[in-house]
Length: 210
Image 1: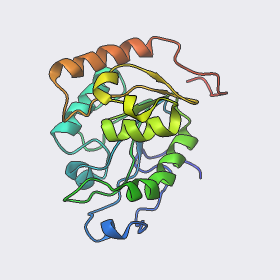
Image 2: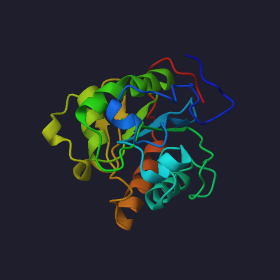
Image 3: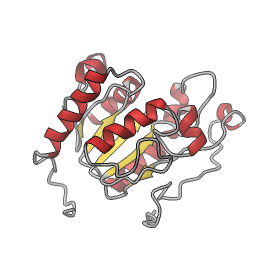
Image 4: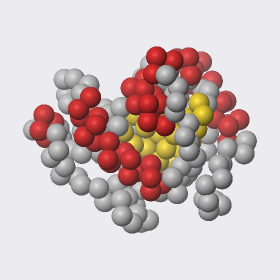
């Protein structure tokens, strides 16, 4: 699957009419696939689209939490547009979710996460980032189980916020979800990420230089 380098919106052309989860197809407004730079070193993964992201079609946009998130990206040099933009100008960042559809009354089920996993796996495999950023507890739990050997009961996003966890092929850099962050936790993550960006975080994986 080749990326469309002309757009940051769903650059891999993933199925926008997906009907793999019957419990979501009739209640969702749209499928929200990944968005951003297909050559990114950093992939940010949330649990599922918010109402705002479902409206815009772009992960981590469309509401107050999305603005806080985009402000963080701007503060670390990954977003060149205003935090309230519905189509942020991202560089070296790709945004996606564990599940691509929103249920208006509940969180994703385990079955829905498993069903949607091939989309996330495809994003990660094709982008081949250096750092995975789980945004929120659910994303940390799922990515930790897939990419680290750390026991699940030790993967608390509050404990690991603004730290790195060594993974299999990637490092994880968990973030408390912006909707739940204090201003101090936001600033802590910005400072952590700026320090991380100055380190030699790139692994020896045959990646091209940026």
